Image 1 (cartoon, rainbow, N blue to C red):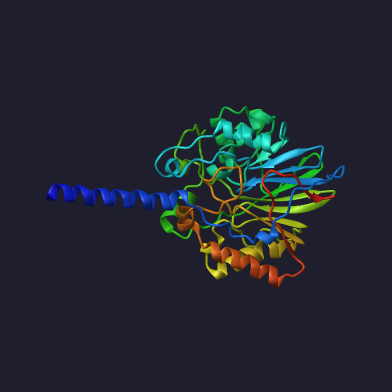
Image 2 (image 1 turned 30 degrees about the vertical axis):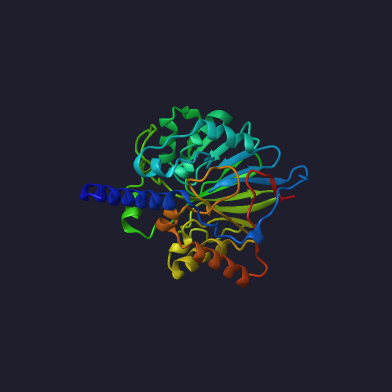
Length: 340
């Protein structure tokens, strides 16, 4: 074999190794960091007036009491890893149509992204357009709506700690903090310069969907109360004086933080409101399809904000420490009764 052929063979092997490594990072997924025993099935009997929830994945939640329906995030697109790393992202209209149909949604009173990153707010203006919902959130979220040509009549910027009412739901948005990515460079790209100051017209790089303001939502209804924590971040003392029967707890990346951070996060969320039930969210992959069984983060996602085993062990530890606290994970799309 000539040196030229040997060199070509070596280069071919290197290319194959590189492709294999990229495929392993981007296309293979970890197991979700939640106990399978926590899984609940969809409810077969929905009493009149009951408050129900449907879960799509990440933090997309649909709440209904049979009279009023409203949605958190409304994110159904799942851009692939190469678009996220090297290209641009935009709402996937077919994925949104499938997601709304799977949730049996025709009309919504409102859609409220928990913050303005693409995996929370990117699809919300199209969801609002299709359902007649009002897009709620920060000025950054409003500029995502404006970039999608959503009418101003369907955009409302909320005020910190000022409750608003949707039917019998009373919702209080509380400004909090986003999960702090442990890698300094990634943290700066994702959380530095947080404002979207002008209408954002997709397709754009994923990092153009800046965080805006990160909210926690407290919800009161005659049937019960709950707290929605969309990201594993916290603001010390922000939830003092609030209580809730259930907490929807975003745990993405929690295990990559220090033990002290995890304890503080728990204290400032679950510990403050003292619920009877915790429902983990935002533990699934951002790139796997929004249909089928839940998959944990891809190997690349786990590398950036991982610690999956730490997340699972931490939640299981909290279950042991709080034997009266019920942990549940929701099925995808199926309606589950929260309060009868």
